[in-house]
Every structure is written in C-alpha cells, then in structure tokens.
Length: 447
Image (cartoon, rainbow, N blue to C red; front, side, top):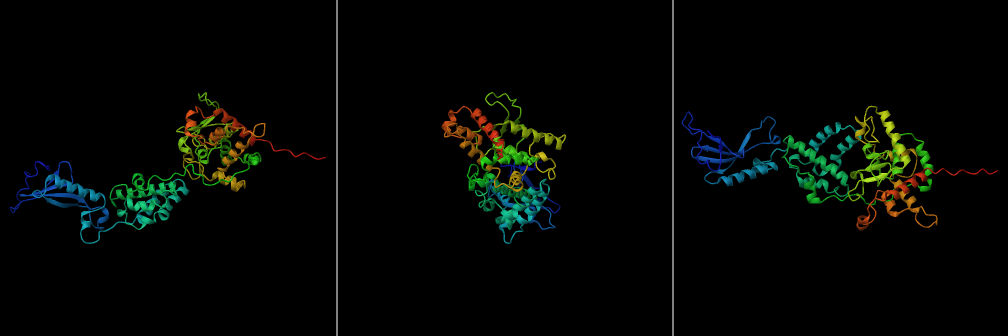
C-alpha cells in the first residue's frame, strides 16, 4: 500500500482503518517530492500539515528532538498547489529563524550570544595555529571589531547585523575588514552546524558587497613619503649591511638590489628564479626573477613582472639557498626567506615577518629609513644621473618606471610599446649595482 500522496490521489487515500473500539485510525502520508509535506487522513477528513523539528537552542535541557506538525488546512478548503505553497513558505521561514511557535504568546528560548559562542570556538581554532602571533590576532577580532553583534543571540544575527560590524572598517581597513568578515562567517556557520541558528551565510562577500559595494583598494595610493637614505650614502651603508651575515641582511640586500616592494621579496619562491639565465627567452637574456601578479601592487596590463638580476643579486640569492640547504637538510627549498623555525612546523610555509627587514634597518643599523624608502632612494638616484653634458637625464624615464615595477605611460603609449624596455632596464640596474659597490674615497695624507 502506498505511503505517498500527490495532487491526483489525495482524495482517494484510505485512513488506518478501525481500531479495537471501532474508531477510525489516522494515517499520515508523505508527499512524493517534498518529504516534510504531509497529509493526515481520518475517515473523510484530510488535512495538510508541514513537518519540522525544533532546533537545539529552542529545547529545554531534558527535551529530545521530536517532529512537529503545523496544520495548513483541509483538502476541502485548500487545493494541493495552495497547501504546498504554504508549506514551502513555512519551511523557508524556518530557515530564516522564524519558527511557527515563535508567533504565539511568550518569549522563545534563545541560544548563546555571538560573543559567548564565538569567543569559545575561535579560541579553539586559534590554539591550532602554528604561529603564536597569528593566533593572538585571531582571538582579538571579536572583542575589538564585533561589538555591534557581541551581545545578540547568535540565532538572531543576519546580514543587517553583520553590516553594522563591517561599515566602520569596510573602506577604512579593507584587509582587516575581510579578516573580520571571514571570521564572523565561520563562527555563524559553525553555530548553524550545531543547530544553534538557521543555515545560511549572512556574512558572505556577496551579501556585504551588495550593500556596501566593493571596498576601496589601498593599492596605488600615496600614503606619504617613506623615510629614505641619501643615495650618496648608500655605498657606505652597503658595507655595514654586508658585514652582517644573516638571513635578514641578505633579504634586505636583495630588496635594495632588486628595487622590489617588501612583499615581493618576502614571498620570493625558488620557482620564481632563473638564476643561470637558462630560460629560452631571447627578448630577456640573463638571470631573471619573475614576480607573480598577486604579489604586485601595480598591474602590468595582466603580465607578471620580470626583473633582470644583476650579478651581485644572483650571488646573494645563491648564498641564501646554500644557507637553507645547510640549515634544513633534506627539505626542498621553497620560500627563500622562511619564517621563524621555532614557531613553525614547516618553516617554508610562511615567510619572514613584514617587520623583519625594518627591524634590522632601524633597530640594528640605527638608520632613519624604511625598506620601502629604499625605492625612493633608487628613483631619486636614477632620475638625477646625468649624461656627460651635465644636464641631460642619463636614463629613459619609462625604463626607470619599469625598474620601479610601475606601468609607465598611458594606455596609448603602452599599446604601441612592444616590450618592457629590457636592455635599458638592465643598464640602469647594472649602474645601480656599481653605485652601491662604489669604494669610499680615501683621505689623502698631508705631509
């Protein structure tokens, strides 16, 4: 005998027959395509029901989960299509946290607040982090950034509430905003898996962007001059730097010789390098360093940035590779500037801190400068190099721009340009290497 009903058979289905007292027994049928849509038959009575279960946070401690049936109406009053529509609406309400019993008198039981639940689960996630600094930063997100939702019951939090968290930081701190959004979304999903709130993703990127728009990118904005060294003092400084035999010193020298930004150096992977110039690339001869687009601040019309490497830079990188092979025998070299091995199970998973080179420059070498400021030193030097007449710029301005990992010229000029001025750039970088290695003038002895 069938256990299912549909629009065609709902009026002909029998009930459960007679019991021992001669009364009609009820029989519950399930819709063929919607398992929580029910039809209860007792004699000539046929009633539509929507089946659901109380979520965990609405139950008392001693209660067990049991199916609930909410009446939708009789077959005499509602067509199959109308009853099914009412059932689907009720089920959709439940997914949004609107439960049938919550419409009655009295205050429904609520679950934990976002702060109570989130603090606990985030602490568990953070304790699994390999890096102590990252773990501490993860734990700080809820108390610092989530005040707008911390005291709310976790089942009541939807996109409007998440937006109140995101608005103050969405454009002002886009990188941190994404960290906060991702953590809030992760906490809400974890609560939904424990049936403490409806399923769904009210903190999704799509939901936030739909209201706040895409965050304003910091890329390419001028945030004020970085402290830089005078180009004329660079040869003397390089002598001091090269006297320090450490990974941090080699990283800073690589940054100066390449003129790249800090992150491009920090995330340098051995696969980015062609140390011997073996690649079959007649337009770009010699050793090369290829920087992926995601490590670049300025998009070179969709091209990765390829840097011509001067001999001293190749020597520094080979020295670092030898150091890694000796320090981590048996491990294949990945990132060239790996993080603190005492805090990481696999040191090649994470690079040195963004402050490592800055600390060496400021705290150890006592210089009033920043690693990024070295780019200003380079550009100032290159733009002030003159030809023999003492007046004309020595280097092509667009070639200097490419050495800065910029995308010089407007769209029209770039459209007509068929290369990235490789040979002029090689000339500039070789001249920069010679300038950095320039011997200090010797004082003449007066008789």
